[in-house]
Image (tube, rainbow, N blue to C red):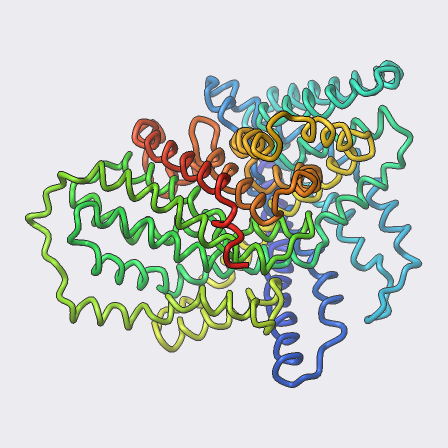
Length: 611
């Protein structure tokens, strides 16, 4: 490595540390502030009037610093199915091209972001009575820091010629669009097709992170075809990322990491394995049940799978299960449990559509049971001839012992839901109750609490949250642009005019969100299309909670279905299995999930019966 390369690497490490430390402290501060609010209001009956405001200010900084960490680590969500098919040399070029495209967006949006923060300077917050620029300043600072890390990545590229070519091609594309500005102004509604279909899809399929693909297409549309001040786009990003309900995202991500670290997930799996391990396909049933229970705690699919797979896969392999079968079922259970509270997708739907979070939490339990039952039918069929002559049935005393060990972990999902339903805490605050519960259980019940893992967990929480929230911010800006263009009105008229009424509307929605889930993942798809389609569902007489469950189950199917579903590849990475091995066995599970989705769509009571 040259002296310049070493200097760039040292700068990257130093700046990375300066970003990660405050991000980790912000996650910790959010937990403390929100839990203090719960204690003050519910126990001491003296609400902290400033807590929500302070949490909101810190949240935007957390989101932007988390996005910086995600960019530095290369962990922003992206669709790489096509890029991975290329030769290593071309794949390396597209990796650099993606970084250059991110840098182009950041360079174009940084001045409007500073302009937006400056406009917030005279506005005073009601409780803390400080300038709102303290909060809005997170946007330009985060964008500037991301620009620096993108430059460092290009500077440190092994092939300097490829890096220069990537920058040159990106600059040429941006210049070409700018010179074609007068032409775009004459295209009228066709610009929606140009920017929100061709540009957005081209960026996504080229492997550019989804958040930046949305940002580039929206920026291009607003800058080249309208007279809208670009600071407005930054304002819409701020609006999308600043919903206080979204504070549940980082807190539930941290809770998911916590239950794995404290051994709570292992205790649940141990109990279920002792109960069903002697049944044909028993450990597969345990996998389905364990994912159901863990999803009710963590809210993060990656955390769910990472908690369950290491505990179950070794024993399942000993019993003769093929790695491809294991990862196929793991991915299928990831899709099955998307509606289980406190799913991040449920929280996102509530934030962008106004649907009650408590109602979504209640409505999401039974659809997952239906999908789980369909998976169990496939498991029964596949393992009905399994040889279990070498497996010893656990004594009832052993089962009872494991149940007592697992009881504190099994109780956590019910504690979380009860706290929301009974009004002890909001959907945002309830995650802090779960975190405190998990810490106490780890320290005093399971006696498994690795203090040295705490800091990396806080940084990981900020990173994943920043990646998610950046998508929500740019997707909110894109949805606003589509709404202002009149697209939402045209879409509403088209969907309302479909023959067959609500049944056809639900059928089209299922197909559309399976495709969207495979390409965009769940959260960006829901942020982009939720505000457009939920009002139409209400006009068609479809209950909003029922429609939410149909949409989520369809998106989960797309998210975990190969060849494009990134959730499938995440499951393969966690299970350390080659993706090719799971393609054939996952087909049966995906068909079962599709049948389950149709049942959920056809019977509204499954989603609304307990509201």
